[in-house]
Image (cartoon, rainbow, N blue to C red; front, top):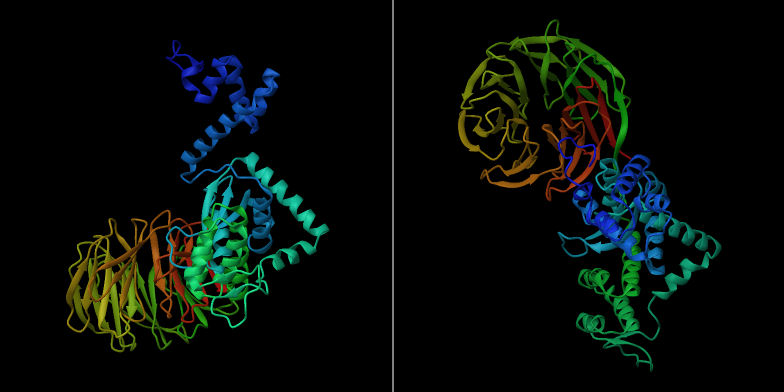
Amino acid sequence: MSGIQGADNIHFQNYVSPFGRKLIQLGYIESDRLEQALVESYRSGRPLTEILELITGRPLSANLRHQYKQFRLFQLKVLYGVESLEPKISQIAVQRIYRLIKKIIPIDLCYRYRLVPLCLVPQRKTEAERLSVVVAMVSPDNLDAQDRLHYILQPWGLGLQRVVITGEDYQQLISLYLEQRNYSVLSPQQDSMEAREIQPRTGDLVLGSQVGAPEHSVVLGGLEGIEMQLASSTIKGKITALLEATRYGAEGWNLVIQSLKDESEPIQQVAEKLLLQKLKKKGHYQPQMNFLYTLRKHSSWVESVAISSDGQAIVSTGLDNTIRIWDLPTGQELRVLWGNSSLFYSLALSPDGQIIVSGSWDNTIRVWDFETGQELYHLKGHTGEVDSLVISPDSQTIISGSRDNTIRVWNLPTGQELRSLQGHTGEVYCLAISPDGRTIVSGSRDNTIRVWDLPTGQEIRTLNGHTDELRSVAISPDGQKIVSGSRDNTIRVWDLPTGKELRTLNGHLSSIQSVAIDANEQTIVSGSRDKTVRVWNLTTGEQIRCLRGHTDLVRSVDISLDGQTIVSGSRDNTIRVWGMR
């Protein structure tokens, strides 16, 4: 390009795309004017084809337009890492878009994020009856759009399959949708007619019926007969087979799902209608986790949050030298516990709801009365900041982890130190205790997870797998799984009895700071330096929800025993409360 230093003898043509070179070779435009067109297209955001025609005063041929379109789609595929698509425009395709917008993905979402739902397809990681919605997006890397789509689709049991399209194709699809919508408003009987079209006919009988078959009816011999009929070339026969398949439970519906890949658009359309009807009848929609309110009284970073066992209170610590107790249903602050010069890094609540324990930068542990807010006593023994605390299920034992690389065990009623556990070669940042109170799990800056026998203080095993320091660990309520969050941006699920890694959860864009598991063993909640709170299915590892709102890293998360409330504390000095509604 003429503006590149040291490249005076290199022609501009070497820097343009194959499409641009072809335009120059055909004599459609000179290289300097092509450079001008590229700059103007980039500056104005208008399509290059439009700028070329304005500059040259000559229309591009249909063949050249098609070549440019294919080149743009290839560029988009490389840029976004998802499949690119030139939508197939037909009346049936437009009807499918109209139906998906009407029933599942609202039009305001399509406008806001420049996207269009195209069709249902079987999920790629599939088991029977699992479906995805193919959504064409101008910007498929838009995280807000992805979060919103997952939020809408997940309650229906639907996955998301993104494809990228050009802005021009998006505009065309939206225009066709609006035409179809206007037609449907003027012809309200259309939907009822479509519904009647896919209902079984009186003469369509199952093989073995006691009623004789009329002359033009279709007789099907169970699932085998349905599969044979679906393999035929007759559209009417296939449609009748699809209707019959819906009577055969999961196996029959799986045949309907597979028919979404049929080469015939009418068959795809009928299969999609049947599946949407099924989803509606099943009443898939469930309440979702949504933002409720923000607590703003801390004047510095919020380091730790916890929900009381009765689900009525939130307790938080911050680097403003305070512990704050809040009424969870209303968000009202109940009392403040002052630590003088102590910066509180960690806290734990006793299961009986009577005690708060806090860990500080001054290497001490403080024990407080929950109801009065009075400090009862403090414990000394660590030679480094106390970053992690847990209390045993019987409320008799405190376990602390410190930057002195040790774990210490204390008798809660007396404050006596019982033992010190040593083995980590780095700071101990996180702890968890099993429901039976016999096993401790610790995570450290040395990148390891260690499992300990609490009564004896002996190390049982070391878990290796994370490639950076551990920031949080949790044990499932059945005592069978460990969940760990690390600075390596991953969450890992482990089998506690064997130490085997079960799965890795990827999705956070930065280090995981905190993890929690709900009492029903269905859900993992995580907070990250990427400023998000994410909700995951513990069994499958699938991300269910991404909660946004914090403006700095999320340092701590907790979930109520009933799984209805999530609390997150952040270095934006706030606590956000999320609930089912």
